[in-house]
Length: 312
Ligand SMILES: [Zn+2]
Image (tube, rainbow, N blue to C red; front, top):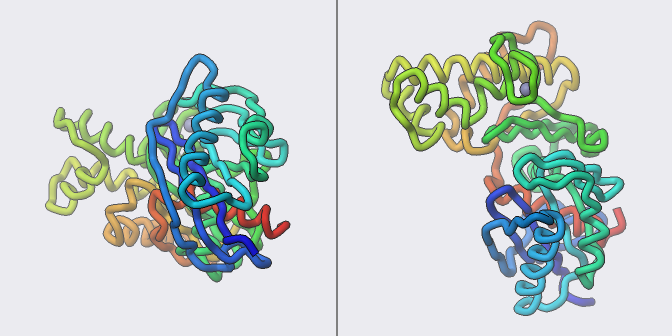
């Protein structure tokens, strides 16, 4: 049998990550183990007046470059951000990529020699955490990356729950602060609790520009009262948002990741306490840090490709 290789590509608004993974595909993609990275590549996202065309050509070229060195792959998995209809193979919308209703799977199939699995980046990252990362071994899981925005990838009773790309918009739960969000509503979680929000709110309060949210967390740890105030708002909003999630879906585990949770157990512990304090009859889920970091999306794309090979 040929080598068990799949290609995986994670398309982001600023960069494209690509890898060739080697794994065992029998029954379950990668068989529960983190696959071996045979080769990898990263490049700035190429956008033009025809973003779907330029991105698909770039993806095909990067896979071509990788497979020239590794040999052919059994399938390719490609994941993109925004609203993605995985069943239809269509990228409905992505704010920073500029496409609308782009039939990306069909476009990729026309450019690539192997079968193509197509999906959503956060959903695929959640699947990777569920199968080979922090949520491994649990029945239902919510994976919540906190970065520029906040989303949730849901795996319910072992199956990713997508609702044609509309499920899991945790960042737009109303947590009651009354400030307007970019989506048009008020009170949205991500307005006070995304990594970008922490940096922005701290800068507005103090006039000090910070490189990112981790600087705000670090300042709070040293007793900076402005950083602590901003962080306390974020912790309260995250804990309350998760309470709604837990009340509705009762996941066994909540995995927190993204840029903000690189700050580790300090922040995680505070969010877990806020969540626990808000629950009465609901069981407190396990609350954990993500394990796969910014490779989660690419690993998830590899899993989708491995599942396609395994006929799942
Ligand atoms: Zn909103």
